[in-house]
Image (cartoon, rainbow, N blue to C red; front, side, top):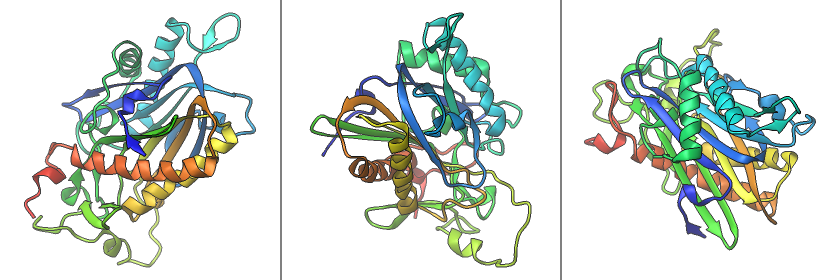
Length: 322
């Protein structure tokens, strides 16, 4: 198994844009020829668009783009800009009078980090999609949908840390598997190889980590109307040949990457979602690919932590002094 560039997987292109002042952005993955896709949503509060298309019972066999965005549900407008750009480029499902691009989207909640009145919109989606097709510009860190991402929020925003977007990809023979993940969890983040905490909730004087699990478990009586302001969203993609039902299984197995790296995870205040995408025809076993995808996602989460920059009053891992 060899690490490769996230941009070296054929038939998928990644573009992103961000508003640094407002701490929000979007990341768009485009497959001009279409890609098969599945999804698995484990968190209780997803902000998403068109995800029912990925149910194996639905007619749509392929989609054309996945949008990972900020802005919570407001940011779902960005998909409209992606659709406009793709229609202009002649990309989509041919229905005679026009080609209709099939675009799915999931968003993180970043409104409490920067300017809550600025969210990814049609123009931002259009710009990111154009970048994907004309000059792919993907970077790990405070870019695209990761611009306003934070982690470790069970103690509130005052004691959380800055996170971002991360990627990782591998090749085994002809088979390639990659992931792009936006890390915006309520829980703390661990290096899955060592079980060492690498980002998360800070203690009161910010001289060390606090324990998000302990804070969550402090109050066992039911808590109503919890504010759902966290979500880790991922697109994992492969040149392996799979249909929608197989991709839904791969997405489900890939959630093990979250479970190994984030704790607590999959809570009612997270919207944890994983898209699994097939962009090639290499014969491969779905269970093997699902298992590798989980590891690739865990590596991408580490990259999201290590490449984040301190911003908006939130310290990043690279600037910790303990």
